[in-house]
Length: 408
Image (cartoon, rainbow, N blue to C red; front, side):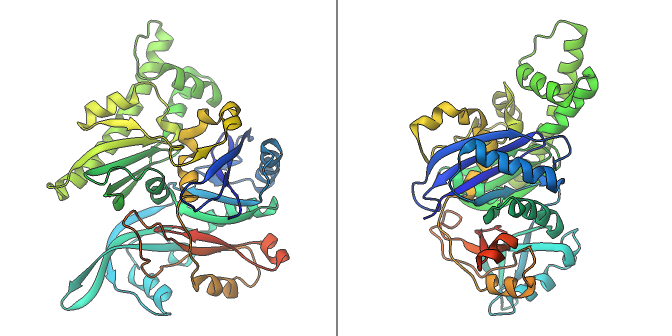
């Protein structure tokens, strides 16, 4: 299996890690690099400035010495919507059209500019008619295409994209007993995915993340965003401020973290109230925004369940020399993208439909897919969708973006 680079995008920079033998039982991490990007290049996990992003991606490849042009990444931002829905049991070639028709009015996104995906969880009946309960994931097509186009303009191929909640669950499947919640605190939003026996059951995107806390410190102290970020990480939730300046910064930090914790607690309470016999029994933290001293014990007390940090590298063999590259410092940020490279991929006829409609133009195509057989862990099989660009056209074939659950 050809190698891929798991790409993480943030306001301050790009991180990439090369994964050998992706989509297998034991992939290996062999190369890593991180580069900074100018302010305004990336916002909310989306590439805004294509020209500067293209330059940065090329710099990242040079710095890391990556030997593949294939890219995978996870998506979770304020433009992603996740809903629990019950839909007709879709079958046959009209599945894509049927999904779009069935979810009309259920997501606050213009369906003409939407990428839709439905992960069926269970089969049910309603008045004798077969239906499926599951998770609907929707995002704005144009925002995702902006990122894909920048990647392809740098000469790279998008091999797979996934909703971060699903990729994180593959990376950190958790115990076979009990209910686990993965809380990924990103830059602009926090993704909460609740799973039973490693299968997704519920997901929410909280529109608040680490950057919101950093900006509050930036304003309070009158420093740059970068300085505020360093202050936030160094200060943590340990307390002990003595000067007026430190007390003000600590107060702002705690107020913002309290708001985030309230949102996480409300999400877990919603689940617990709806499933009193199956409450959340443990929480796993990931994401760069969770890199805050004292956050795990504070969450343990606030949520009333054990909270710990996940190990994004646990499912990988890590090349010895890679340990010296500083990759450990970025493990939490890389988690969502690394999860995209875990588990097998299969193809779908949707790819051919996407190519025909794309007319050779760069686009990302993902629609509803028939249920795939899985091993109960959110599918060690996943369905690929297409992410087509100019680079693929020149090569005479399309690079297909894999989809498992919410893959786009």
